[in-house]
Every structure is written in C-alpha cells, then in structure tokens.
Image (cartoon, rainbow, N blue to C red; front, side):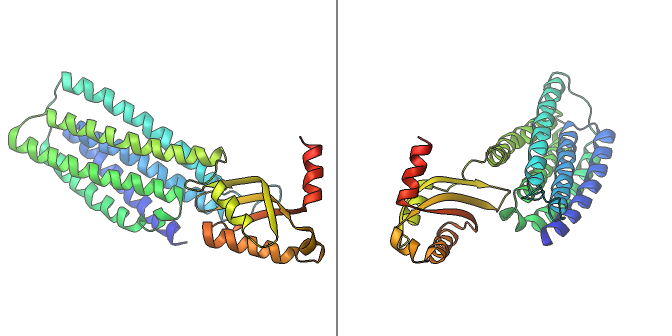
Length: 292
C-alpha cells in the first residue's frame, strides 16, 4: 500500500517535470534538456506501468489464474526497459547531428527547467527508496527517477557552463552522457525481468546448497526434481520430490517432516512458498523406472 501511494505521488511529480522540461526544451533549444525530458517520459510511463501492475495484482482474479496477476509487474518492467533503450538510441543519433551542426541555446530557460526537474526527481527518489528493495517494478521506477535526478544535475551544470562560456557543444555532451547512463541500468533491469519470465532460479540461490540443507532434515534421504523460480519480485517459490525413510513415514510423521522442511527453507533461504511430494525409497525407485 505504501509503495502504491509513493508511486502515485512520484507519477504526478513526473508528469509536472515532463511538462516543464519539454516546454523548456522547446523554448531553449537544449538537446540535453530534451534528453532529460525523454527520460522523464520513460520514467512517467514506467511508474504508470508499475502503479497499474501493483494495483491489478492486488485485485481478485479468475480461478484459472492460480497466481493471480502478479506477472503483470514483470511484463510492465520489460515494456519499460525496451522503451528506455529505444529512446536512448534516439538521443544518441540526435546528439551526433547536433555535434556536427551546433545550434543556439537559451541557457537561462534551460537552467530554470532543469532546476525544477532536479527538485521534483529528488523528492521521487526519497519516496521510492524503501520500496525499491521489495519490488522489481518499484526498483525500476526508482532507478529511472534516480537517473533523472542525476540527469538534471548534468543539465544544470551544462546550462551554467553555457552561460559562462557560450560553448554550445557542452549541451550535446551532457545529452550523450544521459543516454549512456540509461543503457546499462536498463539492460540489468531487463536481465532480471527475463530471468523471472524464464522461471530461472532466484538470483543468488544455490540449488545444491538448498538440496544439502533439505537432506539434513531428520528423516530425509534424498531430494530430486528440485525446481525454484520467482513468481514476481519478492515471491520466490520451490517444489521438490523428497525421499524419506520408510519408518517415520509409515508412522505418520510426514507432517512433521514437511513442517521442518518448510522451516528450513524459510529460515535459511527466505522461501515461503513451497510444494513437496514425500516418497519412500521404494516409490522413488518405481518412479525412476517409469521415467528413466
């Protein structure tokens, strides 16, 4: 709920920055300010997607959607990342043209618009800093607003240099820096999102270490068909077939073994959503014969 409220406030701040900086870019002729405006556009779009995804994910869904709409957050992150990459390429192409053909820039207007962007983006960074550790969509929005704030710093410095020296190409250099700053962070964000869509094991989780911990639970003989994935950011899941000793299994201690397995994964690896199938050694052997 707090993340949604902060995203909504940041979204409104971003819209105001978008209007102010786009107007300033048109009036001043600054490519750096336009580059920051383009980034703000992606920022507003990304925050809007994250806000929509989090809101929709909290709504009840049809029974056939067994995991609800949590994946919408990840799809929103992918769309946002692709948009950021496309806009970054556009800025670089435009920067090349401006370098070859410098234009006149109104530095005072450029400076005022950039200062407004810096203040508004700094507020957004402060609002989203905590939620970024719990949600991939909020993390994406946080990184965008943070890079917007840094971009605004660059535009402010470019405007000051331009006012002091009249060197127009400083505006081009700052626009290139903003574009290059966006690209690696966007690629990392896309990598995380694609890993979730491909149902890869959560980042930093060693499945062999998980298997070893599970086998240390009293009564467990071995673990096979071990799978771990992430439904959405902050929601890791795991399933496994667990071979147990016949005696405790036959004595009705299966629930006790399940409870200890769940405690083990929750305490050691932070995985709270688990599914286990308990088997005796004989059942495991029969399964291996049926599926060689």
